Amino acid sequence: MPFPRPAPMTAPGPAGGDLLRAIGTIRRDPLRFLADMHDRFGDVLQLPIPVPPTYVVTDPDAVRRVLVANAKGYGKRTLQYTTLSLVTGEGLLTADTEAWRPQRRIVQPAFHRDSLELVAGHVRTAVDRLLRRWSARDGEVVDVDEAMMHLALEVVGSSLFGSDLSPDAARLADATLAALEVVVRKARSPIQVPVAVPTPTNVVLRRAVGRLDSAVEAMLAERATRPLTDGEPPRDMLDLLLAAHDDDGSRLSRVQVRDQVVTFIVAGHETVASALTWAWHLLATNPESWRRLRAEVDQVAPAGTTADLARLPWTSAVLDETLRLYPPAWLVTRRSLAADVLGGVEIPAEALVIVSPWLVHRHPAAWPDPERFDPSRFLDAEGHRRRDVVASPAYLPFGAGPRMCIGRDMALLEGVLVLASLAARVDLEQVGPSPRAVPLVTIRPADGLPMRVRLRR
Image 1 (tube, rainbow, N blue to C red):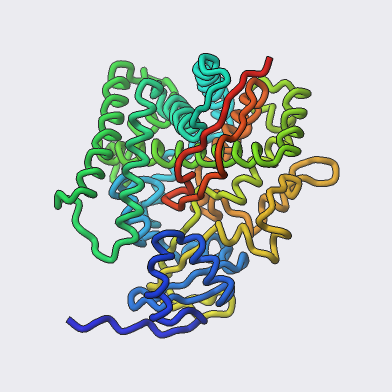
Image 2 (spheres, rainbow, N blue to C red):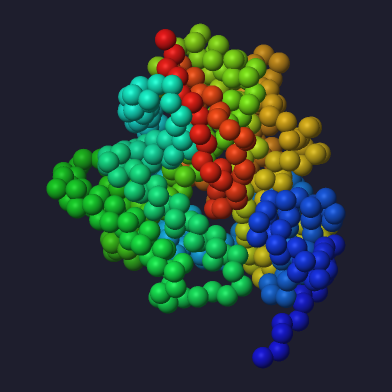
């Protein structure tokens, strides 16, 4: 079998030998590899990969064309989303263009603005539960990363599915992380072993997915005991899914419902938890930002409602800046459906286009002193949130365009309320060195985030 011929080079990029020599760096530290390539070859570069032609795009305007202006010209059938679908199935996150549209229409009402007040109530419940646990550990070291995972999972379960996931939070969080670690391993491997083959990696994946499936079955069994009455509006996303019809008029299959529920269990909690974990790290290592957040919270005395968002601009800015420095989705891929031009470079049809929010959020032309944690970037002179910065092509923590994360508003509300509610009640002191950022499906701290928790008197 002949070796595939290299794709024609239409943009600057490393030679094949350079890429082979960088394999170790790619596996150990892909963020560093991408940054090095950008520094050497610029905003649109091509990797010497035979099939498909592969481009890394960092120019904010070119990124906006891929995700917004010409979004119809790019699909999601890439290795990244294909491997992720081994966990989520063909849910909203991984579905390609045509399959995605009807799915979005079905779940959109669950994220209507009227639902956010209910989300705020679920956040209050989850925060109160966490504070009770921490009260028993006053002065001790806790893993804040683990705590944020469990809290975010509880909020997703109650907000979207009307289910109390707190008893199973640890088990489901572990299953999510185990499954996603396998997804990353498979996405980086040149050899794709079918899931049916009982390799150690596949066994881990099947067990983790099995735990997620069991959680969905429990939700469906519980919901069957209290179905909607005639004329009763849907209570949450689960009701919407169970009442939805496919394009041919038939009800969604159990597999289709399962895929959406697992998608939101996985994507809906791990991304928020990651952002919160990094926010606590950044606050602990930037005392002035921490003091300003504490002063704002003490003055406002947040009630844990949607009204708090307008009254907590600095807390919101802290979350915005955290999402800039540690975007949960650090890598986004698309497949070009037709030839296009990005940043003056010709992109052929069927090319793989890699966008890294990690790099875009550090683009020196868009972000002065990009490595510095500075929440004031997101505030104007009067201390109000700068909508122009949040809407900038160089800021995409939730993606952009029609495939922007459907849960953006929910995630922002949850993040601000958690930061404000916990800051009002506890002090968190980082223990040990700064965590190493590990780019898996989201950016995770390598060994959690140990912090000493002290109750405020």
